Image 1: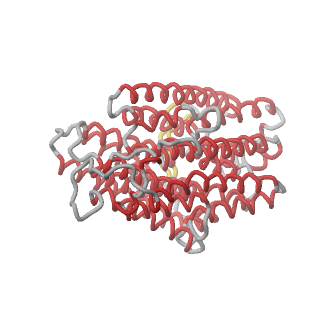
Image 2: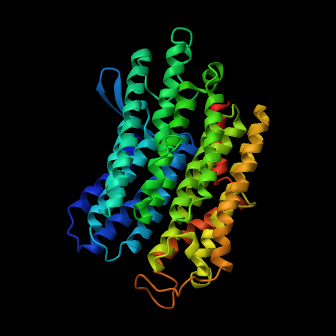
Image 3: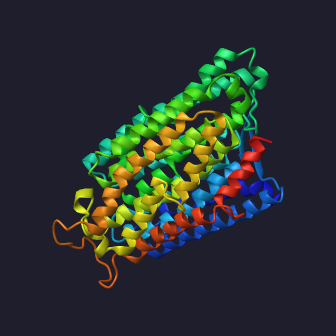
Length: 497
């Protein structure tokens, strides 16, 4: 019985925290902090319990029939827990960071209420056991992140919010159409290792082909595929904790995770290969990787540079999915975790620079590393990981993607990976150089109050230091049984038995 309800409880924790925070008065700082941290810790504990259970063969599934042929299903399988554990861990760290970031700021109850609902939606996407449940949480994610994007209520944030809604609601409509259409053909919705559409290949070939690219367009909005990415740089007007959440675990990862589910658990690798669906996806992913990297080169605004970096880096996940083999799959899925931890570190640090000294542009960062050495060190580690420098986490992802490309006979993909790494270096190394070796353009004047013996508020400093250590650890100990790589290899054996 406990196994039946644990996935539901995992989702309801964030819902309960969010609703409770909405009911609090603005000055109830201690109660709000207790709810935030207590909920995050409890969620992380439950994820740990389910991880251990899945390792020994237990199943965790909640199902509630709604209408004939359609059920609300939450299912904690190995792939769910890969994304769910990332969500739970980074929610805790982002909560700590947000408490420090929003100290003395207005509308904190509204912020943390929607923040918790956003995490509920992300965990619901991770635990969704069928397309219908996935769609519900996918759209809830749009609705719960919109108030976070426009939190500051400035003219720029309102405009960014409208663009965000235009893109994501459009993607949601496509997802609804595709889900209903596919259900009309198959009468089935549950995610299944190896997919469930092979029986319909002969009778509905054209429809299955069209539906695949309809799903890709729907998921591609949140995954920021080239041509569908326009909302992402504009959304950088949001506070730093929101940017960190959007890029590391919430919106863009939801889109990428949707593609993963589509290829592996709806169509299946065998049918995807037979219908020649993966090569166009591979080309689109490579185009996005190069486009995002090139656009990042021209951004002086640090958060926008990181946003275009996300456009590029998330498509590594889609590249791995499209590479026809287990090694590519390993590279793509492990990058889902590694990119999230590296990118959240970068946004935490960018938030520290902006919040502490009001420095938001790369051209303003000269010498800041000597003023904020720990934040600059964390940024440097994560940036070098993004470039793919061994033995950091990003190197592991790119190594397996390269092996996967060779395994599948797509040697030209190696050229894309090399070009992308060189472009990564071209837009990250100048930032690192400016931080450590540049000269200040003006005296550093604190923008907030903090202990003069420290470089910033402690709650702003702890999260990026923890995630920077993880960037190193996930690379150095990639072969450990508890690493993300080992967990991904376990998932891959289910897809390629």
